[in-house]
Amino acid sequence: MPLVNKKKCISCKKCVKKCPVDAIDMVKGKALIVDEKCINCGKCIKICPVKAILKDREIVKFKVRSNLKAVKDSLSENKSKKAKNRLVKNQIRQLKIEQQILRETMKGLKHIKL
Image (cartoon, rainbow, N blue to C red):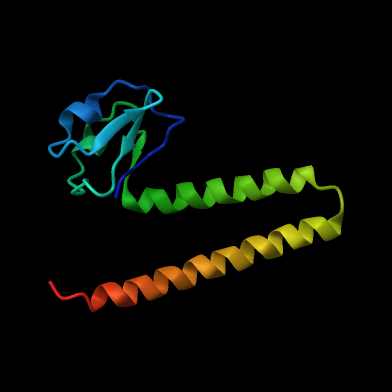
């Protein structure tokens, strides 16, 4: 599903008007794609004048950078090396849990009968 980079969004509402299934809302002046409604047609990506709507392959890079920035920001708040190590280890543990959840969910989706 497409993702809106809120920092780039200029609130022009072109994507909202172009969406054939009304899957884009404006929240606090920024576009928000409702995943449950989105049919992944890509019309919003093409119409966005500032390239604020990311394609699937761009989302991975965006989220990785965002996650790493958040950890680095948290690390700068801690003074001791021990606290920084705990923070990084905790993040790794949380990501492994999320990875396991995704893996199990994907297995379950393969077995859903339509």
